[in-house]
Length: 227
Length: 227
DNA sequence: TCGCCGTTGATTGGATCCAGTATTGCCGAA
DNA sequence: TTCGGCAATACTGGATCCAATCAACGGCGA
Image 1 (tube, each protein chain N blue to C red):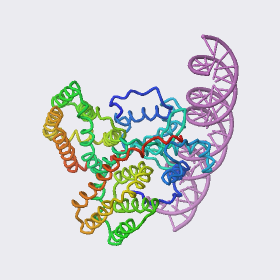
Image 2 (image 1 turned 90 degrees about the horizontal axis):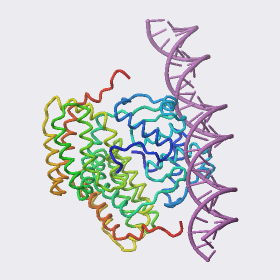
Image 3 (image 1 turned 120 degrees about the vertical axis):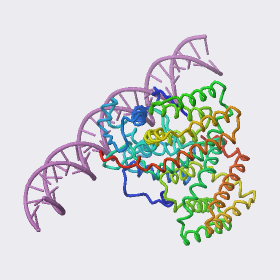
Image 4 (image 1 turned 90 degrees about the vertical axis):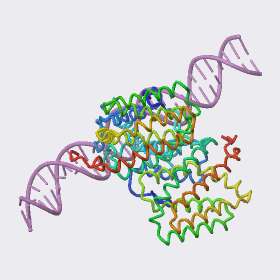
């Protein structure tokens, strides 16, 4: 499904390279939602002409990370509360399936690593670190799945919501909610026992609870007045 | 979610126009899976230069309809049995959700039309007509859903499997299986009664049974020796 | 003073040209 | 006869140039 720590691949066209670099920049928060991406700027910054940049923008548009308006320009996609809830509802239904694909092929070292990540998250008090660990934990639990579309779909959903997860996390932490960590531990145990049904249930509940929590914080989606 | 009978929109770039035209051609079966798409050919055929064609190919690649290999070329995507089963499993889980979004906003005329389509399918004995009716029936049942990503996801899954549904349908018909029609009738009734849970269950079972049936016919996926 | 309209500048879209790469066919050697 | 290597060709990828479109600004009129 494309490893989480994908290093920029030497293969592929310049357009794909630029797309990878832009994607990384967007996910890391360098570009905020609503930020304009000018073709010439991007071309200079990534050492290419505008042609591959346009290709990259098409790729990222298809992934939902960028919004293109004909004859006008490209912006980093914004999410509304409704859209975000929708994506979480989709995740509730398909991530358990992906997990089911993955569990049988997860090795002992990988499972131990998941345990380590779950523990590390409990100890972490840095937002950015928590985000990285959480992503690594969940995508890591899917890593053994040899799917051709499902894995990519899930990764795209994670990518599209990345910026907003950063915002929620701040809020959740301040509320001192422990259920997230509880879910993670339950999940690791279910994976250890290869209990597919239980793992599905836990994961479903985990995502669902996050969605419900999220609906209580619509303020995260308010347009920042600073364009 | 973008109407089923999308007419080629006047808006948007030439690349999008070419993408729409190529998509229609692929879905109609004019291009078979595995068929090569040469940029210059496509450019001539659609009255544009190679630049918008390359844009179109990127768009269709993102939709999974076209497979691009750097420095080599573009082909209409082929599906393997495993991939197809995967997509059906995804559909089992997300189409019921999409239906749930749609039902509350379906009007009486739309529901009557669904009934009409279900009846027409039972009477139809032409493969191509059946395919069209089936697609119109299911996507029609989702038409009232005002989603921003789920609808497109489902439509893409339908598109990617379109060619292979054409092939199954031939087989199913010859086996004289009536359960498909039974499901359709049950679905319309559940929708009439606005019974969301029942509608979800019926649709889930409908897609699931099709998937299991499909697994019994791996021959559909054999590489045709004629490239 | 406010709103409408035309003009100018900035930015995107498309076409052509050139370079790079893969594939095909051919030739020669085993 | 068959396999390996080399050359020619066809196709894709990228850059530059020109056209088209949108947005911002300023001027004019009410």
